[in-house]
Image (cartoon, rainbow, N blue to C red; front, side, top):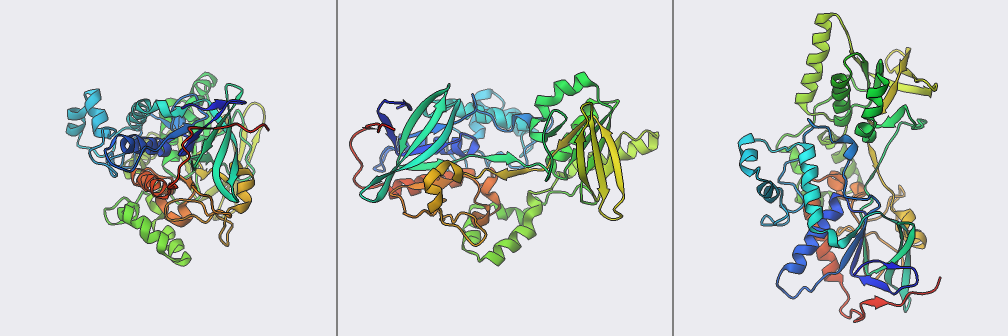
Length: 446
């Protein structure tokens, strides 16, 4: 079934997914394997809606030399189903690179290669996704006082479409985070736009570029700009004393295990906060040690040569960025002395991370019934369902935005394959015994 245009009968699905990044792609794979498996669980019908014209995952940061920070075994399927045809190893086999990858003796593929793997997998399930489709709203459909369905209203090619879902899975991804008071523009932008901006930068021939941030992306941007623009000064601005290495030691990595999600979910709020403080260095503002060492070598080499082109403005923060029309005046303040330095830059790249997209605005009147904790965050069940009043017959599931309930893997690839298996199992187990026999519901005039 496909989405219906306005006025047509609305197709009814067991599951409608909003967004089709890696998380909902992994769910589509789990669904395909579930529906192909023998057994009595029954077919689960699904459709996914993605506003991008094709599959894409952080395309603006697919730097040729950048590697993944997660093992290839934590792909879209292996930790849920080690025999899956959607595994990264099967991808390598179909591409004729399996032996070469084994000889490489590396757990961490190039990021461009992993993105190609995602595209390869997405092409195998493209019959259940509509690209170029933006979801505008969700409305509850009541049956005897109970929420029985969710009507999803979207737009594709300028035309309205509708779907009806027994369950929703929201995989709306992350949104670029900019420093407070910073307005993006032609010369000030988030690192997610890096590769899309490179052609314009090359044409401009920059003399000075500023990078704000202390994490992996910031370090990668600094290295790339330093390589690309041999006549430009690259200034790295960050609050830390130096780039800090990611803690990827074996015992600490257990924080990404599926069992750790159970432990985190059951823990009290003080323990959750403590665990996040203890192990934030596994992911946040953390840089691969090899890259840290490479940047230090560059700084030292330039000191020896007497030409400093790579500057580290550490223990500092930007307090003002003003686009003058021909450049950017960046005021940098030392956190130790309060001294301020004004840099005249051609562009500023803010490698300042991401925030989970808030899915509740999409829920319309349902958002008012979203249960929240003392800090205003959605209450989420162990199976990733949002707590709603009144409770729906099906469920609204979150892929991301659950770090406060499920831990640090919420927005990472590490536990994706396992998480989608749990969501699918929940949907199957909770499916109402009496499912309407009609494949379509009659569209209601608006």
